[in-house]
Structures are given as C-alpha cells and as structure tokens.
Length: 357
Image (tube, rainbow, N blue to C red; front, side, top):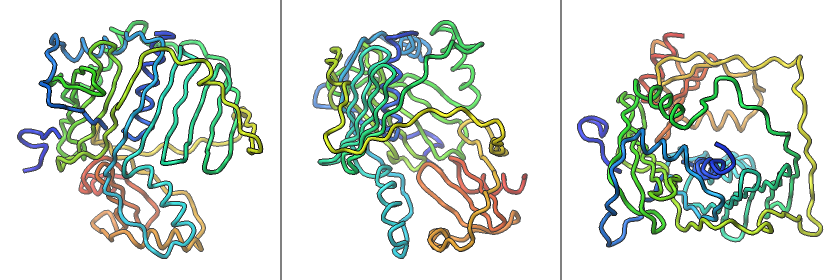
C-alpha cells in the first residue's frame, strides 16, 4: 500500500500584486513549506472552507512587505557522472539550486516596485523592478542586465472580474482531479496560519500532498510544502521573518557598482517567419498528465550529452527501449527512437503514454 492509499501522511489591482509576488517568490525558490511549530499550541482560528479561504487570498490587500524565505529541496536527483569535465561543473552549479537549503529575500511596494534576491553565502543574485526598469544582478559574476518593461496590457477577454468568480472557476477546475480541504492551523515566522491541503486523486501521481500555509490576518501565502508519494518532503518554502511595512524607495533603486559590466537588453518583436514548436501530445489529466514529444535533432558528436544519457538506467517494453530519468517529483523516459515522455507520475504511466502515441 502506498502512502497515497489509506491515510496520506503529513508530511485586483495594485495591492493584490503584492500577494502574487509572494506566491511567485515561493515558486521561484523552488516550491514547499516549513510550518514552524514551537512549544505553543496551534492557534484557534475561525473555521473557513477552502472557497472562503481562497477568496480571502484573492482579495488580500497589502501595500508592501519585506520578508525572508527559506527553501529546502530533496528531489532525489541522480548523481552526475564524474567524466563530464567543465560541462559537469556548470550543470552541477545549476542543479545545486534544486537541492539543499537556500535563502530568498523579498521586498514589495505597490504594483511596480519589487525585489527578489537569492542569497547563497557571500554571493547574491537578484531581480529588481522599479517602475518600467528591470535589473538582474549577479554578485558572483559581477554582471548586471538592464531591461525596460513594456507598458501594461489591457485585461484579456474572459478574465474573471471578481475574486469570488475566479475562486469558483478554480475550484471547479480542480474538483475532478484534486481533493481540496482546509486542515488545521499553525505558525509560520511567528504568525498564525491556516493550512490549505491539495491532494491528487490519482495514485499514479508522484505528489501526495501540497500544503499551503496562509497568513490568518493578511491572507498571503507564507509557506508551501510539497510531499512526495513516499511521504517525504520534496520541496519546502516558508517565511522565517516578515514585515508588512512599505519598504523605503532606496531598496528598489539599483545602482551597478563601479566597474561592473552592464548589458542593455531590449524586447524584440516576435518574428512572423519563426515557427512555434510543436505542441506535445498528452494523455491523462490533472496531476497525472503525461506529455510525449519528439526530441529536436542534436549533434551526434556531443560526447558530454552521450555520457550523461548513458549514466541513466536502461528501460524497455512494448513501446521500445530508452533511458529513465527519475526524481521524487518528475519522471522522464528518453527513447532510443528520439521521443521523450515526461510527467509527475510513476514510470508505468510513461510507458502507457509511449504505447498510445
């Protein structure tokens, strides 16, 4: 019996832009939730249904904030082969962002001032928006990139006009594939929170639960916890401190240090003669969706890519033969005939999708 069977383990407008920034920071940090529980008992809060709680999140009004988030990931990534050379070092550096513990700091003021910084020891990578100016900064590379954002676009047709309508539509979309409940309370960064729990109905999903900690006063998400089907935390993000005072304007006034290389990047119009990539074929629904697509043609003399692929375990079946890339939350099969099937599902669902396509 899997952990998903029987009882699952625990493991509008200017102001709402701040709420969306917090959600984006949690996602950028890597998706989880450290629900900090101290010796004090969990807070007693007025009961709310999922629709009521999500409605309050959608209508949240916060003028600004300064917060620090801690992100922890244990995705079970396969070890890289030792003979990748410099390419292995670069890939290892990128993958390090998906493992271990990282600190993310967030500042926001209104709808057009925001800063997100990933702090790793003495180095910092940040993204700062001040009006139409956007700065990306890397202290380790001593590089800054400046972009000018386009003017805001009108609301797309069909966009829900009220939080209540948006929440109703969201829950209607989730209902066929997801159990959504409110489950208990707790504390994050010393603040009382509600717990919103999303559980996939399909046992083939590698996700057992997603638990979101929502501030009981401001109704901003303060933590997200993704639990894999083995009952272990795969990704956790939670605030360790938060202040809802509006930050000073100087926080968003990025000035490149003297001598730093600055790259100006302009938005380019889409070229009409460039074909969009083919959409992948899909099977399954919701959390158990599998995408199957053809791999683009690549150089056959890329020895490093071959070494990396050969390090993965061989799998085969009626669908053919290939290599399996497996993590706690995502599996992928790269076939010898140039296809790839990927999804947050057990490998057997990938094999079924390959047979069907």
